[in-house]
Amino acid sequence: MAQSERVLDLSGVTVRRGGNQLLDGVDWHVDADQRWVILGPNGAGKTTLLNLAAARNHPTSGVVEILGERLGRIDVFELRPRIGLSTTAVADSIPNDEKAFDVVRTAAWGRMGRWREEYDPQDDERAASLLRWLGVAQLADRLFGTLSEGERKRVLIARALMTDPELLLLDEPAAGLDLGAREALVATLAGLARDAAAPALVLVTHHVEEIPPGFTHALVLSAGGVIAAGPIAEALTSETLSKAFGLPLTLTANGSRFTATAA
Ligand SMILES: Nc1ncnc2c1ncn2[C@@H]1O[C@H](COP(=O)(O)OP(=O)(O)OP(=O)(O)O)[C@@H](O)[C@H]1O
Picture (cartoon, rainbow, N blue to C red):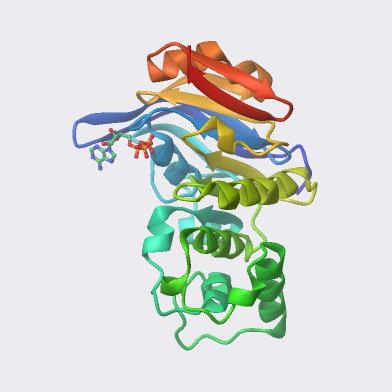
């Protein structure tokens, strides 16, 4: 895919469930060479938006185009292998007694656990090299359920990359990590952000400290609506964060990292 190609195109997207308005008229465009962070308070609609982008959910109204295909007109099972997804829901559906190596490798078949599927040597090599790249090759034979939170997050990112996706969606990849593990993960994601061959990236986080250097764009959400969306320097400011979180906040940029505190 050419670097400038559009991978996500949402127009006037509304999602209503059980009488609640989860998203309200969202317009959002992501190009192949962009790295987006989504921020917003609890309940803002971040996960709902990510599930639409992952073809795991449909809008109530509006148009969602993913990798040039319109949701509702395409078989989502054809689309999903082209999208890497790491979320708590994915983690929860992986059997605890699966080896880390198989957690990654089974993504080639879109499966959560091993069954009777056969793997090519190329699948094995790719799974091994992804575990290596994420710094967890030594855990290949360990059972998923015995991994620490930080180790699990890395294995899940390796899994999300297994199908060589055109779009990688990460929901709170640093949640639950200690400071060292968080910083190591931020460095890994910064490496991915810098890699011109990497897929378009969308990362949901609660903390600006977790934004990896190299992320280019930000979407700030509140109560299902877009407060700001665009290049990170314009969309991520004290004003947009204060508006989204409903309290005066000061955003400070330290080189390529951010901190936010109450003003
Ligand atoms: N099936 C549903 N029916 C009714 N309301 C729902 C449903 N699913 C989600 N919601 C509500 O929609 C809102 C948005 O949820 P969502 O999980 O997208 O928010 P979020 O920004 O990811 O929140 P958090 O930061 O807490 O993870 C929440 O108020 C949630 O309670």
